[in-house]
Each structure stands twice: as structure tokens, then as C-alpha cells.
Amino acid sequence: MKQIPCPCCSDTLYELRNISGSHAGWALSKDSTRLRSDRQGYYMKCPHCSKRVVFSTVSTVVGVGFGMAPKQICLECKDSD
Ligand SMILES: [Zn+2]
Figure (cartoon, helix red, strand yellow):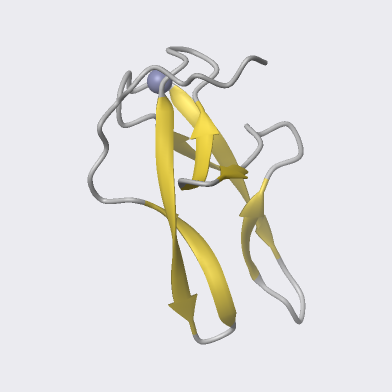
């Protein structure tokens, strides 16, 4: 299990678990923060500081994946839940 810290508060934002087998790699753990999207793009709402953590799509050899954007503005997330 790999813990990815929130870029705004350094608390754990989400966890990746290692998958073995033919599709080996890393995947979001079940109880991780959900990746959401709206008109401005993909993001996660940090469960600790409620900041909007921006994600961008990245192309990999196995297809399109998601990565945390290198630059975070750490704005309060306006999502109501
Ligand atoms: Zn945070």
C-alpha cells in the first residue's frame, strides 16, 4: 500500500494498492477519496482540509491514467458533499 499525501495539508489523500498478475500495477484502494470531475476537470476533495486537489490525465503505455497536477492552488472545494 502506498499512501499519497495531500499537497495542501500533507495528510493522506488517497492510497494505492499493488495489483499483481497480468494487469500488474497500482490502483486506488477501495476506501480512497473518490476522483470526481466537473466542467473544470478532474479533482479529489481532500477529506482532511476540504481543498480541491486537481488531477490531470496522463498518457501511459497502457492507456490514459490520472496523475495529480504538479501545481496545486489549494482552493476550498465548493462541492457540497
Ligand atoms: Zn488536504
